Image (cartoon, rainbow, N blue to C red; front, top):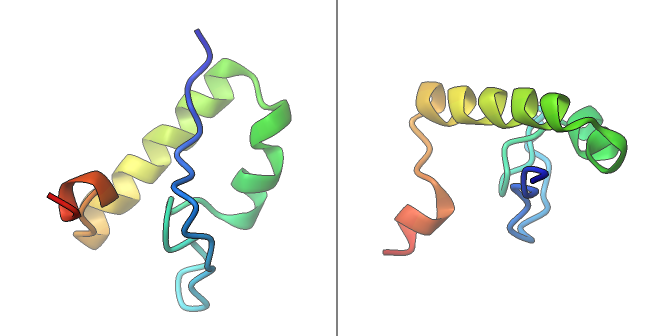
Length: 65
């Protein structure tokens, strides 16, 4: 099964980090998601998880709870 997109429809780029404020992907990662292999999508998701942990940004579903 192909990994689901991390997009949560909060699409604003942070100028300081270059990451989307909603999903923490870069513009390049967002642009290539649709044609990325499943392995590449997993690498992007791993990078997002690392950014979230490093930046101490709660996962949007956790922040809403």
